[in-house]
Image 1: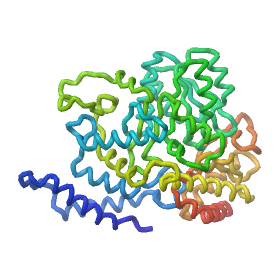
Image 2: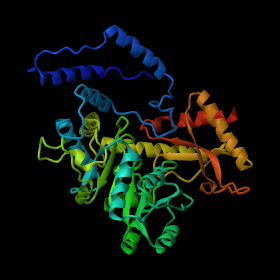
Image 3: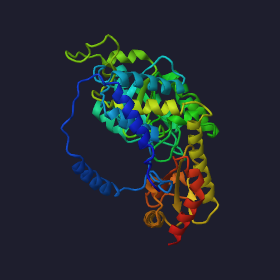
Length: 446
């Protein structure tokens, strides 16, 4: 599969137009290395970069890796010629405005018009900010998340010196509401993290039930939708997941990663707060940063300081090309990824080589080879993973609870099994599912 090069002609024309905006400046020729040396280094780098899995190809169906849209790549590159910094307006006048507009479009996707939010380096930093605010508002109180929530919540709680506890999950990887009720009854809970799209299985926590409990116990609800947030636009979710996404706008804070389903380069995360008053918690003094304008500087509502304005430019351009709307081209791409996962699940269910876990809620599927013991199944999973990779099909491995498979039982205190995992987040995966299943079966037979 050839990498896109045709779009570089578009970048050249855009660069010419950008250059025209600075034509009044005196001539300046930076003293860079000569082009021959640069080409030598770049060709050496290109060779080293070949030591990667083909993340951009549909036969890469492993981790959460999705190529950025060409318009995002080009926009990021275009902005790098100016290299703006979206901390203070001095460093990123145009891109600060683009960030505010793009983040506003993301917030509107959740039904928010008045809010506080900004871009950041990724989901970890976005969750750090959300939980930092939660800790400021409920100091010393316990933070709860599902045992299938991302491990970053436990680490962040340690950094923030907040008590952290895991809540059990059900057989489909979702937070167990009965277990949550029991923990809430003991008191001293400040925040509950609801994950809408867990990293391992794409499971969606039951947000409506969590919101109902908030009315009784008064905790904050933080939605970690770093992976799944954009599925609020999808029309083909099953009823339980659809119910949760319908209520996402009632959360106190939301995290979403444009560098996952938002077609952006790494790293581009986003944190949103329903109450704009959260901005007062960020207040700090700087004798040298915020004096060029009375307008709000993004650094005044962010724990991060320097942040790439190029990320804002790329996100803005992508959302101008592909609007965040129900029924649009962007939403159809999400729906095709989910349909690919369902098709994959049905394909495995109809065969004799593998046993799939529960029906996928988003676009992630976990499955195991058939075997007579957990040890044999785990060993087969690792063998199939290697055999498939040798044949050009790239999957992922995960260690998940046995209870996710209806026919598996714990053995000798072993409650987990090594499984195979596929993230079908590229729309074109829908056209490649049959070939993926065929290659997977060949790998199992070998």
